[in-house]
Amino acid sequence: MVAQWTSDLVGKMHQEKIKKKELANEAGWSYTYTVSVINGKKSPKRAEEKLNSALNMLIEKKKKRCCLTKN
Image (cartoon, rainbow, N blue to C red):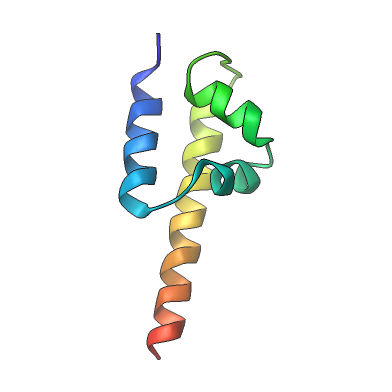
């Protein structure tokens, strides 16, 4: 069964238009491993913290790029 946090993570990724490959790169994991975690096939310790942190970093980077292009 997929954990609730992964559903929340995927929803936030969709909302922010962030791809799984981008998330994997930011987290320092392979794409395949990241997808396995998101799909509930692997459950490493602190995965929720690591992937949410990576997602938040991507969102911040995206906001900074957006603000730089507006100025």
